[in-house]
Length: 238
Image (cartoon, rainbow, N blue to C red; front, top):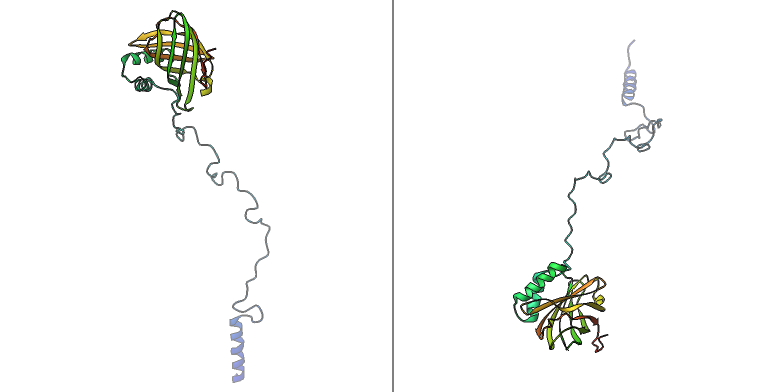
């Protein structure tokens, strides 16, 4: 059987159609590919990971002991006065550099420690067997400010002559500056004397007051009395 040209052309068209694939809607080069139906698997994140699958985030567990050095804090401010500070203040106040003053201050510090305040002032009084004492000055502290003070008090003892003296008083265990406004009792005399400076001690409610005196008519007797501190001047010593 001899093929005709029409037959040959038909065979070529059929071959080209089979090589290019099926035609029709959704079969072109830009057609979307069909997705398979969802299977029986959970979406990502549906279940938490097993323990130990990932390392814990930073800060989850406390560091082991000694892993970091302890924090460093600045030291608290010094509230007491050192012997050197007291001697320098006394030398400026009394106007002279005296070994006697340094010795008296060192004696007080060795007995009562470092004070947290001191008073610088002047007092006057006189007695013949009995008398009065008046003074005024300024209380100095390191952390509670300064305070104007006045003091008065009777003295009873074997004292001679008048008195006009600059006075430095060391103050111990002062909880607050207004706490000095009270009555201090003790042996109001020069229990310790060296180089023209005398020291004695008074106390009230755990506060210790150590007057250091120098000046004309420094009293050397055993003056049993008290000192009353007030915020204003008064002539009433009682």
